[in-house]
Length: 227
Image (cartoon, rainbow, N blue to C red; front, side, top):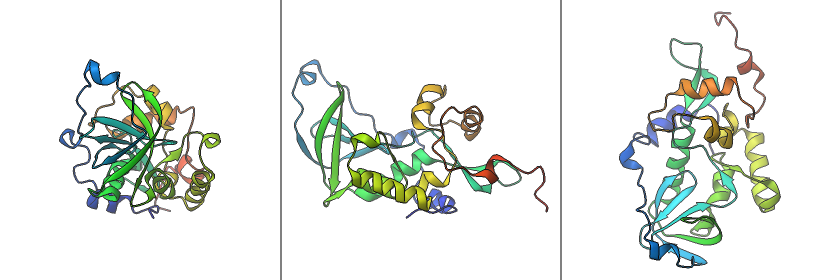
């Protein structure tokens, strides 16, 4: 489980190059013939992890998204309310998108993934429930605070229960200030992997929606820290 204060260690051990473009494998566009092919209900094989919620099956040329959850985008930043940057009063940045991808890659670890397709989200993207060795990847991501439930009314109770536990324990994103992912996608201008933390800090100051717990100490930063 990921607790507040362990993000620095995770950044060193899990994602030494998580923001490099070489690590972000993009699927090849489908041909006109393949787009008309009906999607299989179940698919199994080795995958490439695109981000914290998206998998690419190279053999069958299928892109799937873990159904029912959302996670930080790769360039997105969160902020640790219990730590500050060196020589600064600013909250320490946390690469929540890169950490979500790294967690998913480590969990899969090259093993075969079995996905049951639930819906077609777009022409080239399917929503699916995916398991590794019988473990639901989306459920595990929720449990460690690396993802959140998109719509509580449309997911199993075990998803909602795992999220309540992760929020109460303040695991992962629940231990940080982070802009709601949907709002981030709508408002972020620079979505490249070189995005700087200050850009997300500025978005948080004018946020409309926030999924973070009410960190009173972080919202009311003292002018001095020597007392």
